[in-house]
Image (tube, rainbow, N blue to C red; front, top):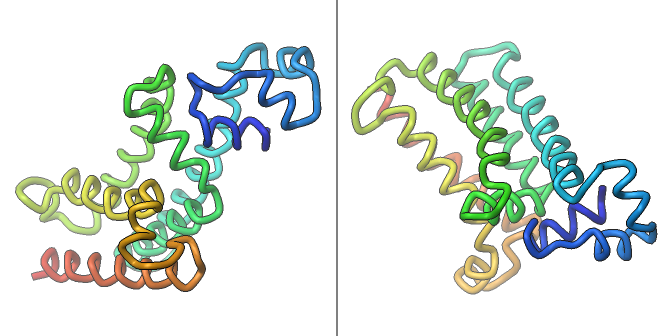
Length: 190
């Protein structure tokens, strides 16, 4: 699975081959086909693994104790930690949702998570049910602020002058995002 994760992350589903995955994992193609059935089956296993872990993290944060606003912040924090730990995930997902052959499969995993987050936002902040601060717009904006940092790290590196994935830079990014979300929360609380 690690080799498949790496190859799908670097090349995308379309360009990845079972042979390349087999070579990196030092196994043979037949064994991969035996366990996963096809490249599609292997890709689905990689996705399932990621989305299962992500779902557990987000659900665990939102159903924990404390005020809902604190739980949303915990969920946001866990999402950032997940992305930091699983850097290929961002590349796999975004390559596919931008027209890859596995776009529908990726979207099918993402929509339930997005709906879960939307429900939490709406419960915590009733003002987000409609209007310019609607939960949908907040989710898309927050998602963009988070994902762009990971997905466009080459551009970000040029902007900030060092590797954006260094722990100190990731910490600065988290603090910046907290401030952005605090500003939004103040607007929702007013």
